[in-house]
Amino acid sequence: LLAQYGVVALLIGALLQGEMAVATGGVLAHQGMMSLPAVVLIGAAMSFASAQVFFLMGRYLSHVRFVRQAMARPGFARSEAMIAHHPQSLAFALHFMFGMRMIGPTALGMTGISVIRYTWLSALASLLWSLIFTLVGYALGHSLHAVFGQLRVIEHIAVAAGIGLLLARLALRHLPHHAIVRRVSPPVSVPDH
Image (tube, rainbow, N blue to C red; front, top):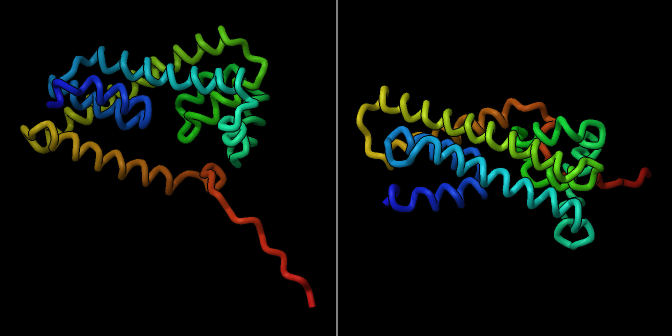
């Protein structure tokens, strides 16, 4: 079943979930259920496609309600200020920043960076990002095999997903407090008596 629908699952997962889907593709490649180069290319294509869509929305559709709502998020103002100072380096780096998949490219679309320059930087970053996470998944599949022996593919994926969730939780716990965007209610003013 995974061999038959693995490519479709990877396409959708890489577009929506990103890192976890591509790493899972790496585990499947280790199991021989998918081709390692195919996983890298699919992950890169989906990362590139989503970044391009959000960049172009920021560039040409900033007046549309959906984009205006994204711009109203608390993280948008911070990312916009950061991007204004370093648009080219961040066009590359945003692929590797947790939580910036939508906001970053949208904010970049509103800067003066050319579409062609952004496209090249995004393509290169997408390929490198996909290669890294695919190889992490492949190495995880190798490690799982070494530790647990011959497991069925679904068991490899379940263990890999559990480890991935644990690592994500640990990363979020140890990020600086200001790096995590949270919705906070505005302070309530209490009249002095």
